[in-house]
Length: 287
Image (tube, rainbow, N blue to C red; front, side, top):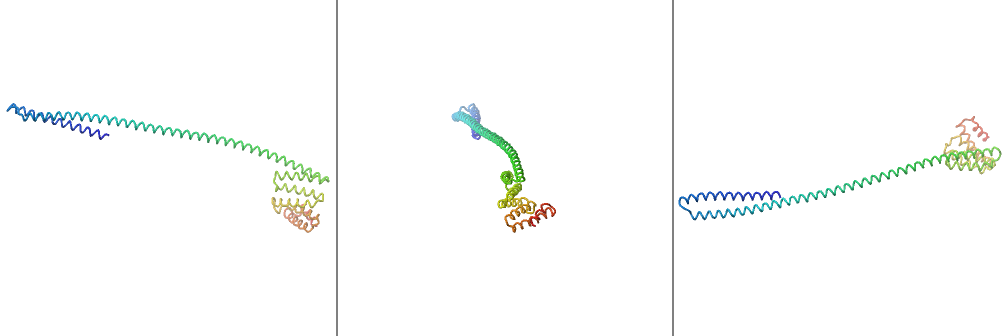
């Protein structure tokens, strides 16, 4: 666009230069013609030449005016086109910028909504976790309190059962030991040493009633629990072996009983020595 304007200006300047040159030439010829006329009179040939130059000058002036008008029109049109293009381009750029801003604002609003939603979800999750943790804490406390209460009940049942045995009523002691056993298994687990201790008491209650056949599986289970929980060389294991030997001896199996007593005596000697009352009791069973 700028090149076209520059070209039109150069053409206009060229035309003006030609006109000025023609005028200068015509002036010079007129001066010479006047001098010749004054000396020798008017020359028809010179008049013809002057008329031709005047006609050419008029034609060039007309052409110059037309070129000037055309140049002005071209410059005006180009300027209008340039301004219009700039305006359209500016409007387009503004429109694109507005669209980008709108998209950016929408993205920011969406992201902010996501952040707020995530925050609410986190708060809700934390609140649920706090409630669950508090519930678990209360449940654990309540469970512990209940277990302690049950263990107290089981201990009371064992004391009552022992009292029945001491007063010659072992049959009354058996259901009490069984109830206490159920509590111990539920609260402490089926392989806890306290369960083994209860089983020994239950077996003793059976033996008190001469029900040795029922005492044997009870003593065997107590022995298995103590060996696993306390170790094979523990004094409690030795006592379980001795109790089992007593039951087998009462059932007429001294061969089995002797081996159990010997093993029990060996364990007690290593654990507590020969002078311990329990070691001496097992030694008497061997005799």
